[in-house]
Image 1: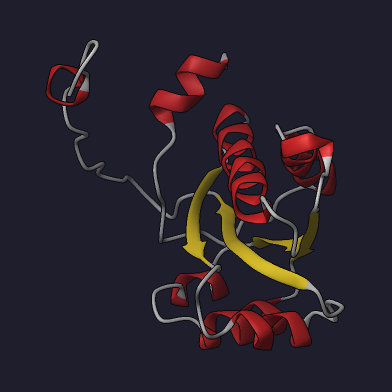
Image 2 (image 1 turned 180 degrees about the vertical axis):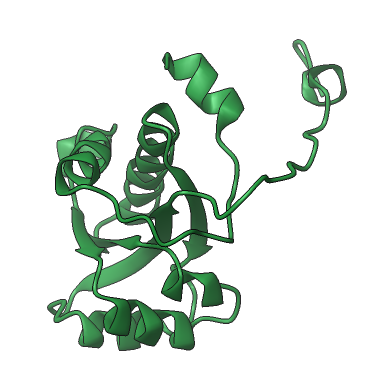
Length: 164
C-alpha cells in the first residue's frame, strides 16, 4: 500500500482478534518509527514491544481509555528522553508506526501517554530508566470483525488559503 493510501485507510481499532503478529512484521512497523523526522536529529525515542498478555493487561489496567490494550496481540510503548522536542519527535515516531501498520494490513489505536498520571507507573513496570517520558501506547493487531469508521471533516471545511 502506498503512503497516501495508508494515510486514508488507517483508522482506530479497539476490538482485536487473537491472531498474533509475526516478529518480523512488528520489527518492520517499529522501524518506521525509528526513521521518523526528529528535531536536530536527537532521536530521543525508545520502543518497547509488549506481546506478553499479563504485561499488556497491567498496562491496560493503568489506563482510563485503553482497556482494549489487553486484548490487542501487541502494544508498542513509545518513550522519549526528556529533551526539548521530545513530544514532537515521539508523536512523529508514533504516527509513522500507525501508518506502517496500516500499510501492512495491521490495525491500530493510539492511547495517550504524555500528560497522563500513569506514565511513571508504566515506565516502572517496563524498566524504563529515569529521564524518559511516555508518549504513546500503540495497540496493534487484526480486527475481530467488520468495523465502522467515523467520517472525517471534508477538506473544504478545514482547508484555508492564505488566511483562516
